[in-house]
Image (cartoon, rainbow, N blue to C red):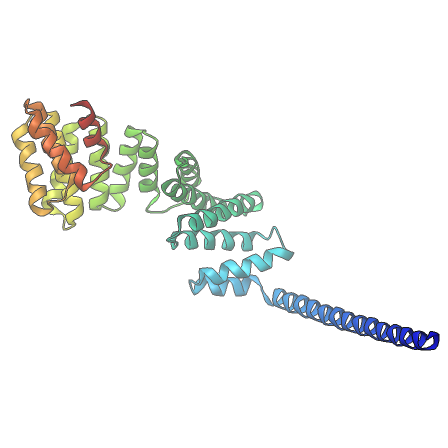
Length: 318
């Protein structure tokens, strides 16, 4: 019995020893394979990084391949963090990638990268490049202001003005300034900037923006003149409808209810689902003391646009 026990025990120990050796072998093989894989990835990355130059980045930029520029710059900057050319290309690529996004969060992420890298680039930028960087930083803040709940219009104004003062020329600076001033409620500054923009390039949207600012400044006659130009000459139906709605509102303020009604009815002939036109007609009825008809029009406005601020307010008041 004793001899049999020793043989079985010896066999068990042998199996255990073989199992341990096999485990060690497998572990060594895994370790070697991991080391090879790590080394391979390292050398591939290093080789790739060594092949990326400002020239290759510039070539991608000239092909309008902003995604490639973004990726190349990201790798390049790992070894040369403060290379001004790479930072500039990187930030500009981020800006254009942000503009192409349908996902607002992704657009914000690209804009944040854009802004951060332009700020870094500004520290050691060549003096001749600084105005352009300021212009792009102003544009980035302007665009960020349009897609977030926070306000960046003041920073847009700051850097656009710096770019302008430092001699940077761009046809759209005045228009960006006008829109940014409007966002800040700086009506007269907005009008001045928009008027300057008109000298560079006239557009229906710009004429409407000026009319809206004159209306906010209670310069009703001036606003009318711009609206007349749009209604008479524009081929853009959406802008014409907005102009007619605003003109109807101006006529209400002037107590020309017949003229106002005509404008709102013109809008409804072209677009029966204009919440603003129904709201305006409701205000006319309210001014004339017919609250029943007024509420009927405001209900129509809310049926079309459930969050129409004016109609909601009027319904709560009457």
